[in-house]
Image 1: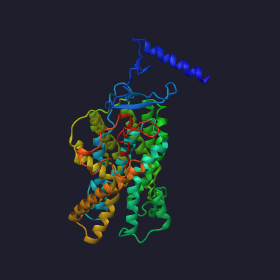
Image 2: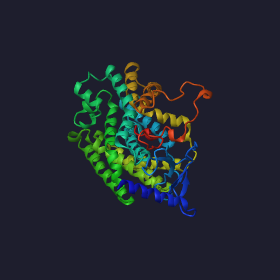
Image 3: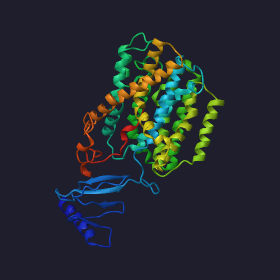
Image 4: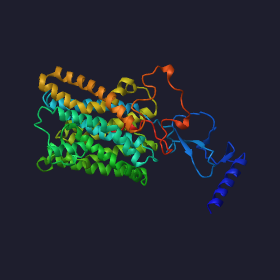
Length: 456
């Protein structure tokens, strides 16, 4: 009885539109039953959605083929959230500081400058910051209606082109200490599975050594679309408990590996399963902040002070500082996100810092390559370290604009260059109707801006 069902639906809509005191409102010639969070739009207008709203296009069989209904649905997940921003600029800026922190670790590790000095000796923990931030940003920006294939394609477009270019460069111009590349380890690096061989140091650090963390990120991307639906079955305390237990188990594996290097080798440092705890607590924090939870500043400062005390007084055995600093990193990320949600002003929102964060992924991939080659040719010292930092930044900017952004647009089907690139402002095409906005997906659903900014 499909026809009877459709007729019944239309009768219900007509009744709703005829009642002036009820919740229904008219939209063209059809009545639409709306909730307080849904309001119909003029079909002929170029109305733009307010900030914090998500556009939805209905193609229900209730309406004739020539009628399209546009509505705006509030993006509030729970009471008290308000209109949440889709882009958190402070988090983007913080990525630059984490990337430089990793640079300082390699600077002292290879004897270029400040060898053995704190905090440079624990600079590798900047990767832990990246893992927590990646979980937070991806959980914040991924909408429930996002298809897994779409999500994977966006992550591939985000990290893989620049990654492959650096692999080719590092393969063609090997690191000074590298005797040659083995075919099997190179294939593992190309497939982003090198970190799954923790007992083989040549495999984990194949071609471009810093790329082991991208192998972990690829695994995080693979299971996030399965983790987010799972978290919706839990209450808030259940999500925090799940994240806390998950993180604690991986932390114990890290600590055990630090004190048993003969048998565990890099298992507690580079193995993707062991690093999932940091990613998961970032995911849980983002989910809870979306639902209205907030971390008091006083509590955050206590956590930060406690983490610093642990590093200074308890243990600096590699890689235990990763675990000791993770509460600090999570608190900093949460505080920064809360400041962006409240739209507070601050230096981290300035364009130079945000831009440095946007370039940080390319910087992370090139910094060790530049540092070791310059140190091999020019020697060591603070001037060489500073020259390496500046050279790596220039190299990263070039990669970001020549490879990363154009290839990301190309893979996502947006063209190699943005519309109007190279034109004067007066010759730019007029803005399009809202229904054709760039945030519209091919399947009719919509995504948040900033969704492709996660990861390193």
